[in-house]
Length: 238
Image (cartoon, rainbow, N blue to C red; front, top):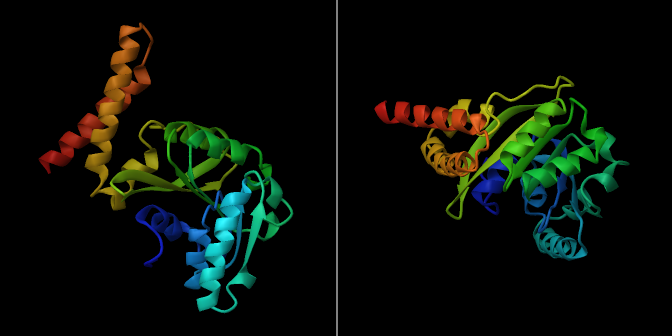
């Protein structure tokens, strides 16, 4: 589906939200994602949450503008002032999908840690970390969440990934937390994978060089760097 009001990053997140879902969008800012999904009839209801009054006021203004063009829109979304998911615990039984986009991986992990009710296999998590993706992948695995898919996208010249997850109660250690197991195996990432691998090779090379000079072990980074080099070489030879 095409969402004219969303950039590629939020469009990618929107694609993972299930049809007919009741969505909780955390850190909603302008509420672009829930309003776009409601406007095209993709979801049935949305909670748009943010920790600060300023973003919620902006979301309210955006909602009011859209509601003038589409009757009934305001009745299908509730704006919530809360830190993460804490203020949504009373409505979580009705929520099917939760999106947390545009935050660091550590903050996303903290928000999920503070909300034990997300450990429900029927809830889908759509996560878009701006930084610290390996930290988030490790946290998810250690806390029983499986990454179904991790898709790459570009917006404003920058490369992003969006994770689609659910709770399984079975903790596991990702094989490639630095690169992303699901990301590397997703055929939809084929076009952007070379750029992703090159970017990570540069980053991992700097880490390996710095830790080696400091006498610090970096076996995991070396292994991820070798895999990235191997994959990129294989793609160039195809």
